[in-house]
Length: 62
Image 1: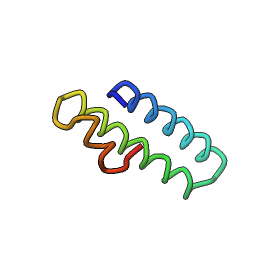
Image 2: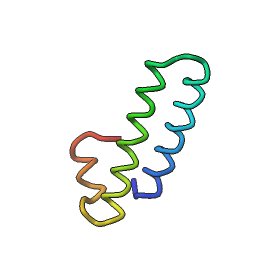
Image 3: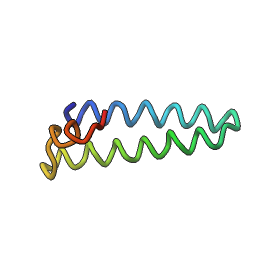
Image 4: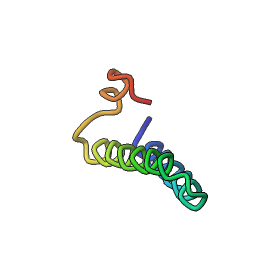
């Protein structure tokens, strides 16, 4: 995936986290919040050219 796809996934995870938080599903909300941060950082590192998208594929990230 390119950086735009990682960003889109991060925003979707953040939206999911918000819905879960509103429904008092704190553990699940924390999980999706963490996923959103991780995917945002992946997007940023790819965008800045610090790490290629192939590196993430090689490590089994999706």
